[in-house]
Image (tube, rainbow, N blue to C red; front, top):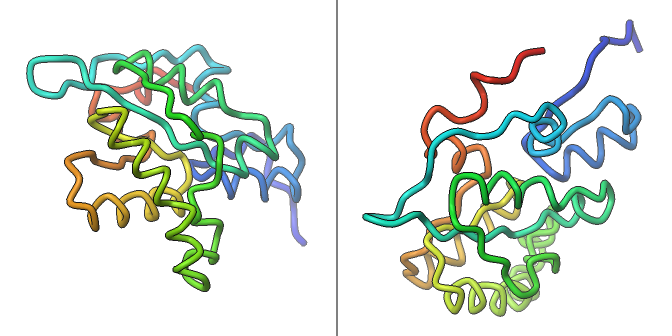
Length: 171
């Protein structure tokens, strides 16, 4: 298999973090929010929605939350740059589930519908995902509903805040 590369692997995809941790060892793999939290890399700036601080919710990545136990860190990062709003059912699957949404679109839509209702009822400006499949699922669902809520990846939200934490992280 070749030489093992040293160091930590940081990923912006919850599902990938869980898979890589299973293959390479948990001590080598970190999801972005976990990596930043471990380095006390507090984000700078603020995400605004017009004249006020943005209201932002999170859709957990099932793999990240259930397999790796990471759920506090993304919430703390969001709360540092916006008003964090906890969604009822944020920990429940959004219906993306890897290829599930492509292979079983009707069942996937059934799982997504109450989540979209909760997002609309929470009156948030953004909903954040830390997994690309969840992000795609949320974006498509919100677009179909012609919702004013935008779905963003956590990294996109942090970048919107201003300089973001990226320039502060070293090593």
